[in-house]
Length: 130
Image 1 (cartoon, rainbow, N blue to C red):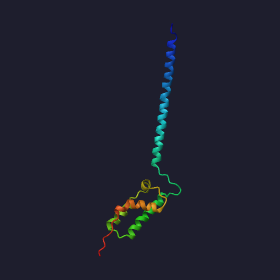
Image 2: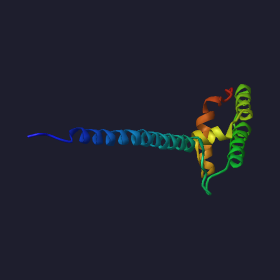
Image 3: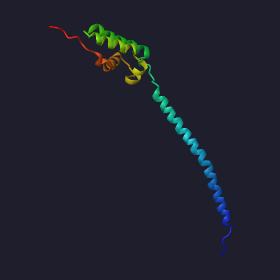
Image 4: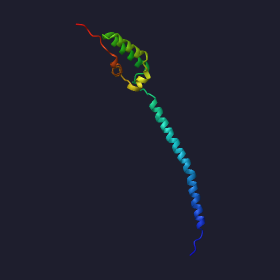
């Protein structure tokens, strides 16, 4: 029994493998490009702060934060150092960073709670002599 046309079957199988190899790198590159685009999109989503219609915007948050500190300074018997620290904090206050760290905010109470968390270490009361 003689086997014929073996080389023809081998070459056609080799050609089919080459075609698959040629297509695979393209598919691999396309898949990598899609994955990279998805990762980039995820990073962009993480870097942005989306506010809903009920959330306070940066101007509102800044106003509420200023009011919070002003109320503490005017109503509490703070040391001069504590007043200076609070005023310095507000002069360097970064609203966007504050919202990203503690927000988004939908009420003044939420802003006040976040401000308390940030400024509580700066508040020192004067000792009253009795």
